[in-house]
Image (cartoon, rainbow, N blue to C red; front, side):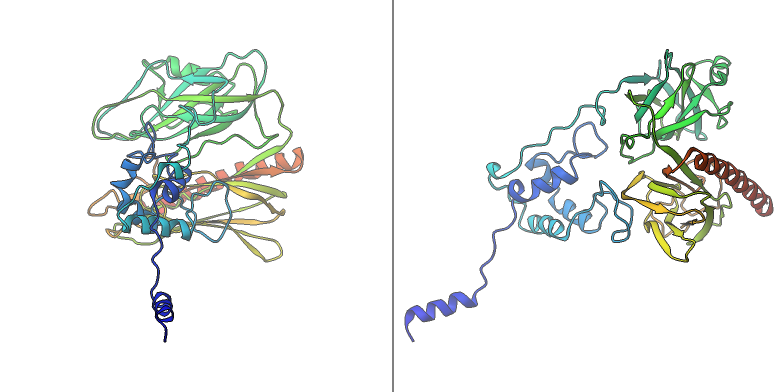
Length: 436
């Protein structure tokens, strides 16, 4: 056998190791597209990931939390429903991060990498047409019960406006539990505000009949512009009222939240509606690993479903929403198997879902009030009841979409109001039964 043939046989039997991934060529594209939105200066991420040195010292941590699907934060279960802007890494991307960390996080050639992304400074939706900002900071005490405070912003508009985007920016996310935008055409909010010294007025009750609602804020939410034709109409004489829910952090904090409104010159053409669901039958014993609650809403008209927003508090565990069609078939609307209060969002479907009249929307919630739940705020666990505080519990679900006609819209809103009253009545009866 010739020496050449022997050499070829030896080469063929030895696996040639591929070059390991490098930061600039392989890792930076992943971090820039999937992580840097939060992991940069001034955003919610605890450290930036735009430079090699920042990523290198956290290479093993990055590989671990991505493999465990902790990061990037995306709570809907994979493989069931397609949503827009899903923060999900492919198997190839996960393996790249793992192999890069295992190889010692090599840098590579900066010329091989993509340009560092440029992000909008401040407002994520761009410069607002109208900015509403608290006239002075609101002080949140170090301890005590959660606080609901209403801040009134007279819009002082001369003609009706069409709002196609709302971005709420808490001045202090440490204490901002959530915020809701409420429209007041009665002047009731101004009267309530005038009775109280300092910024805003307290209480869970807004003190007036709302003329409408706008998107607000929850931790982890992505601000978005509304679908074309779905603007919110605001008429002259309307006040924008921001209901802030504050949770004391252990030291005195100050907050000065601001809201950006984005306008269009085109009035709405769609019949936008929402389905509002919840269960008030909540009283969770200490140690209970799978406390369950359920709500069912029947559509009074055909609906094109565009988005879905679930809500629970700290010991929430799962959310499962399905649509039971009149023909007996079932569609998944949302599955979350590992709820995390710190990462809530309004999930927008990649394609709207058509649900016919008579469809039953079934929302099922579970809570884990055991010591095995690492997010349980009580150690040892305590009984948790229905309430508005962060350490209480609640359930909620808002489904947004369109109906075909204004008559369908009237029927829909009537059903939503009736359902809300039914949920409150059932919850009140339930709480009386379990009250001790």
